[in-house]
Picture (cartoon, rainbow, N blue to C red):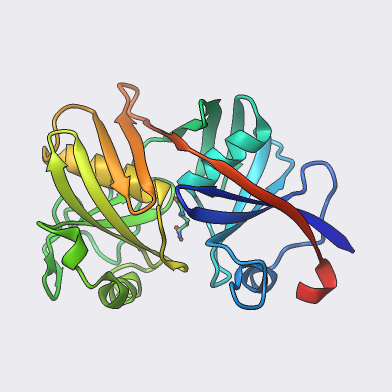
Length: 270
Ligand SMILES: N[C@@H](CCC[C@H](N)C(=O)O)C(=O)O
């Protein structure tokens, strides 16, 4: 069976999108997703995205990391999917329903409300998630936020000097985080601006992480590190605009790009 795919990215965080909204696919397992995501032997991407019909929203978006884990949220893929769909839509994810709307060159996403309770992150035990009394080498006193998926955020003086390739996997797999965690290191660069690098759970270092940008901006606002309710978060792949709306929900605005379309033989990966 030949299956079409769309290669897309948001700020260099790249996706293989399988659109099964009209023509169903055989069930996609984590093993198949990992094989598709492999940059040496597969198509290669940071996440495999599957679009399916939904009983609760306009359609459903499933998200797979390159290690095969199926996860709850992906900010950059939400913008890519908005571009693909071409109009306002409510999208069911395992982390909740998000509203996607194309905007010039990209999209604006209503990502839902952040959660701060220790068991909503989730953490292994009760702890103040605004400023956690824990440390890994020089990285200390992080915040934790769930924006559909779990994030830990360290505010540091200089993000480029943090050995995130070494500390990222250590923190991601720490028993404090029973469902593992996305690891963000952030530098406040102005009253409304933040520089961010992310070690993604199940994926490693990526050019950008939309949910990481949302979680980091919210953590900075909660601690009073930035002024007001809006911030520009600049990742290695470029900037995202994050707003903590009066409704308590998060809006993320930024670019999305379709790179190319192709197809693959399902049996080569199944
Ligand atoms: N790239 C994403 C996040 C993808 C999922 C993440 N690795 C997880 O395991 O939660 C984004 O743009 O948000």
